Image (cartoon, rainbow, N blue to C red):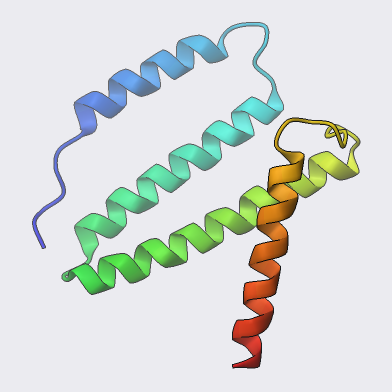
Length: 113
């Protein structure tokens, strides 16, 4: 597997822009938490790419990262719902419900196999 490209310059530029945006009055704890998760995920993907010796290992590592990220996102959404920050009419709630129902059904089927 080829060595990971050197993206440090581009990432530093992007992060600098994000830092400036976060200095504004609209930035809050939720934004900072989302940013932290995004940066952690980006770092993990780059690290996986550079540390695996085969495409199969890389794809397995990516699958595991996606599952961990999905769990984290679901936990954050659930916390927002419990706190009353996500009313039923919020854009995306219906789609999220459909995806979660499909995911749950598929996970239940795979457990039975």
